[in-house]
Image 1 (cartoon, rainbow, N blue to C red):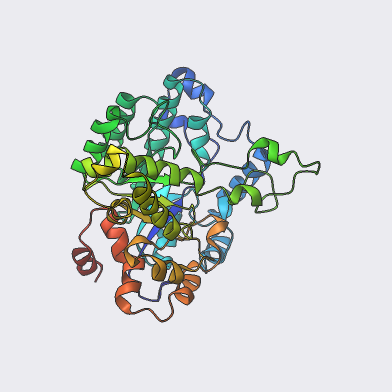
Image 2: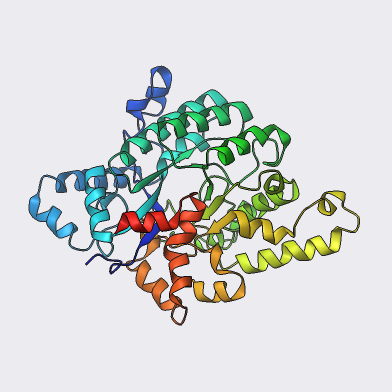
Length: 392
């Protein structure tokens, strides 16, 4: 019996925990030297490298490896997590977890892209990261690779998306902030959205690139800076957590208002690891704004449906395990939400499946199956019934 107790479950959020040299094999010339060490300038970098070395040493110790595989979800997380960066271990972890599919995002490898000072660096780092991620995901058909492409340059962003999809990527992620100096709804990006729609590739927004944190002046409170979520220094703190959903709301509002979801009616996407308790009220406010401003705003008058209906048709969201997904469903719609483990990140908790099960108590099997399986299949443009038969 697997961790999911025989239920068919798609995991909409999992990660690689990149090693120090994760990008280097996929770079040449000046960029190879520039990005040869993922953690060279990161806070806590030495501590991270020691954890990576410990996880590598475990692979040559059969007893330690067997112990780690006894219960990966409750065991060590992060770089010490089973299959955090070793693709063979990840396959074994998936066998234990029992997930039918797992959407795999990068973690700290994104830093080379987001910190790049100009586009040549930015796109070279993106290509290298995407190649590394694809190599990891090629280990098993259950691993759905998420490529990252910056939208700073519409043509180069589209070119990298095409390259990554041709290599096997199943989704394309980008910053939840503005697309360079433009809205993502600008006509310059229509070829990008057309490509995703035509090739049935969903877009992804994820905590990280573009995420808003508490403005610096609010942090000037006369007190020492507190430890982060895990007691260290490289992760979120409480005031930042309360800002997680600002950027996705801005991005999705632009996609609705600028007509992207109207022009590309089969475009689909996900908002991952940004919580979801805010979603019902966001949908209400979109429609409230339409009622208030459509009397004078021609763009709102031209819409062929209510703003919230575009979101319900196109976008899916992952709640945090400690959120009440049952309340969200009752307050909005069951087709909006997805199961996620965040494996092997500690934020996913030691029992995400159990926490979500408790939140879904009282719902019928159809609603549960939507949350665990079919909403993911819809987002990924997959036929849920065919997937279920294949799983059997």
